[in-house]
Picture (spheres, rainbow, N blue to C red):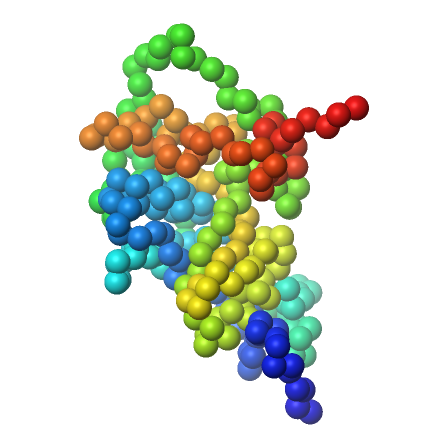
Length: 261
């Protein structure tokens, strides 16, 4: 039976799938990193930050086109319509029933390679570099990490270092790519949520995907205090900027204004 869709509805609803498949578990996307006019130094920081969030995102090549820098990636977030019982799965939107589908392969993406070795983005390419820790720090400038004991948490209730466990991404998706947009919007919340169209060519979303540069304690940053060979900080710039109050803060954030009693 045909279902009429109001002309005012711009968002595709249920993905037009024909069978269970890898799209039930993961989807390939192109992510925008930033404009080339920002310069290599800035883009290296942006790309290193993005490529650090490897928990539920697999990254591949970085490429340029028409003044923009992009990255190919796979989002490993299941569809909300997928229901699994052991080896059997069902699509609750279309009624498909069959063997549980496999998603795209999710290879290990180490960013910390042991000791002072790391994988970072340099000159818009993924490279392996030795980033020695500083031999000594100025005691006058020593300061404890204000986030070390913070009870902040992400939407899946993972506690600690919430800012390092989720991120905003921009997915290249034109208005005509309705299947891709429907696949993105159908991902399981909160692992991928807050999907909004950014314009005619892309949509934005929030993804839970922890950073691979987190220390063993799951709080500290392993790049903190380290420098690249040219003297630039290895830690992405945006990771060193404290968030503004009352703007997109996680529950329990130490920078949130305190409630008056």
